[in-house]
Image (cartoon, rainbow over all chains, first blue to last red; front, side):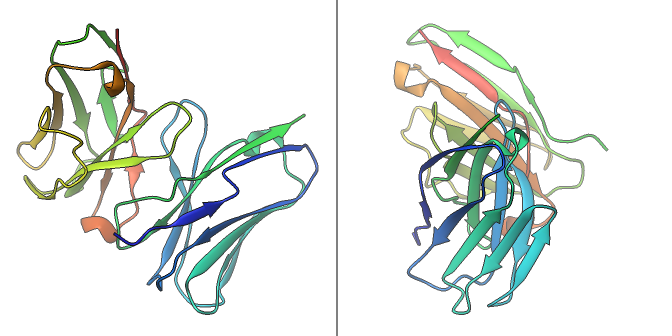
Length: 107
Length: 114
């Protein structure tokens, strides 16, 4: 099993702050997906990144895929309480997810 | 059509009893997955179906856990002789084609074993 490491495990910040969370592996990803799970609900797909060095933006969220395709980051600008949730990454050709980053944004 | 649905939404049972959890995937989705999420934790993969067959059941934690899928649609996860450590949210997801597709998750079944 090729493991995905996500960091930090927990993150608690104030509304308006910026943050970055990471997803890393020792092996190359063919492609990677980020999901967000809000409290009491199932995860929802945010983005799929495929090409090394790729950057995708989704409103205040910026996703980056490392040049070597072994790591990815998610940066949130001016976080809002609605961003609170569990952020999960998943190698697209694997059914397993990373352990996730649990983000809390305080008003 | 509708998204992935799961029933019941909540289930409270006594230790030692059997439980059945149901998942209705999105119509036309050939792949179906079960995950378990303990309180405050990430997703633990349990089993994957492609059609009615289960090519990967490596995540089932013990022989008390079993799952089946009939007609390429509805799936049932059965836990026999439940234990307190089985308490968790059980999530089902489906995707259009194999595990490379985007997964669409149901709301989960919260199982509490007393």
